[in-house]
Image (cartoon, rainbow, N blue to C red):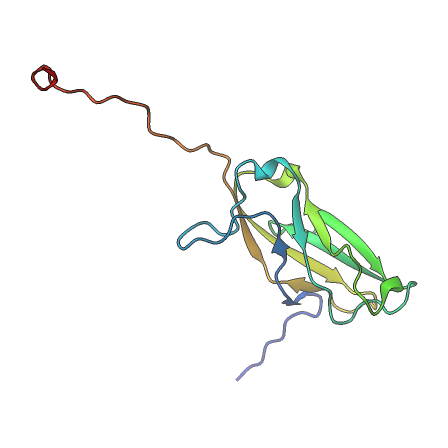
Length: 152
């Protein structure tokens, strides 16, 4: 039986999914991570957890990137963390998706860690984000029409 190995250049998917702040709670049969009305008018905050092997000294740097819709070459946000807080996590474990990316539709989002030691990049699990800019169609106001006989 042949054995296949993934390329060592491919990121490992071993980080937990990002926490998308401000999306509506999940509803049975509803859209996944739906932005509320007008939620697309401000940047979308994405939080993530501290990883298991952070940079141990201030001269080393970990880089976290947000990947939107699978565009590997153009992260929508990026932040570097040096080891100055080691072993405690820094307070700013979050990034924002800019409003220019928040177009109507279903989008994918994940974050990537580029480790301080140059080892293989690590990716988080991917989550879907649903953006619906279409206003609801409400029932038109109407009045009841009764036959003249009934109104007498």
